[in-house]
Image 1 (cartoon, rainbow, N blue to C red):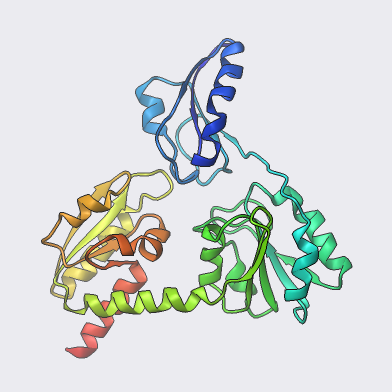
Image 2: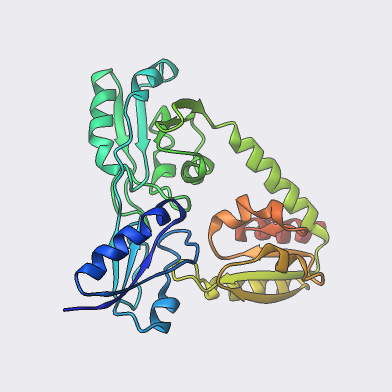
Length: 305
């Protein structure tokens, strides 16, 4: 049975879009490719799919994040990363016996082989358990580290196997133990827990800068896995109860130049992807707070009064 299908790819897989489209067309389907950016399965092109009357959305590169009221097929796209960096990593892991090992959905199928290597070399390997959005043992997202924080006291170190620092940063900020990155693509092994202090200083700076804020803009994204109007309303009431003014700002993808044009606001509060407040605050002229940082601002002002 032929279908009208919308294909959605993250940036790293867009180079394969035409190849997949032609395969599905050869099967008799009408295929359209979404050219919009996507930040993960929290950011499905459902509005586009409905607009064109698609029967199905095929989302590549990620596992299901949350249930949506649409026909979505997830193609998780496994990647076999080279494992030659594991031998070199043993030098930096000397003295750490019990290790929490984690990776992204692209490499979870390799965790058994990676675990076996480390165990053969005297390490005890623990895999973090799925939490809210993660679905598989050992899997992390940039916004969800599974139960990594619960393992903090019971392991000696954390090891992330994969490319770049975006995905492990969420887990890094939820833990306190030594944290290592094994990047099989850049051929590097790096201890990255020094980033915690960088993020902590940035957070403290945002809180202190916001102490004089009177007008707050609360960001709410319409993306399927980021929409949180309930939290936004709770935060709005807390701000107003503290004698300040608040307004809810809605968008699908926030354009920071547009936000910077909203000069009446003294600070912004994020309820969308948690990484916005931690990573993108440098792109706004006014402080961009997390809900937790807002609570700190309100508590400090209450003590001051």
